[in-house]
Amino acid sequence: MNILDENILESQRERLAAQGVPFRQIGYEIGRKGMDDEEIIPFLLQLSRATFFTHDLGVYKRQLCHVRYCLVYLSVGKYEAAEFIRRVLRHSEFNISVKRMGTVLRVSRSGISIWRLHASEAEQVGWP
Image 1 (cartoon, rainbow, N blue to C red):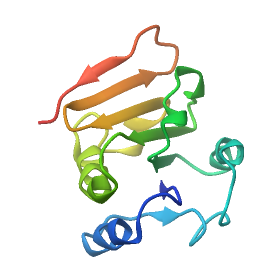
Image 2 (tube, rainbow, N blue to C red):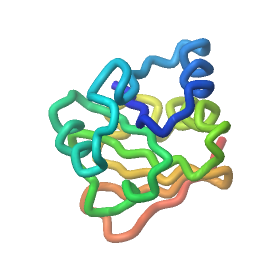
Image 3 (cartoon, rainbow, N blue to C red):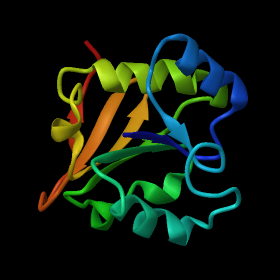
Image 4 (cartoon, helix red, strand yellow):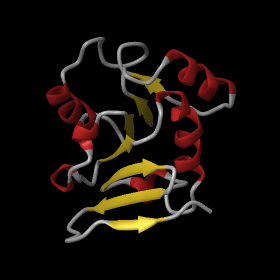
């Protein structure tokens, strides 16, 4: 299940919907508006194989890796979120939810930095 943080703009939400990308957004279809950052992780643990997309740098931490979810920090402009969400979901390393579980990603124009569960260093992958 793809989950968008509240901080993903309505225009980006509409682009994803128009492109057929399945998602739910905090405060709209799932969760509640104004959820604190501290509430997000326990909330994700209640879901099945959630991938959470946000502009909040605070999620890009190795210690947040968990086998039950994937966290994606979008280090791109707010008006580029939909494009990069689609790129992540189509990337051969992350194109199915099982491949994403246990990771924390930092997505930028230059590529993806990946913390994996039990890894001692972050990996880097480029865009195809």
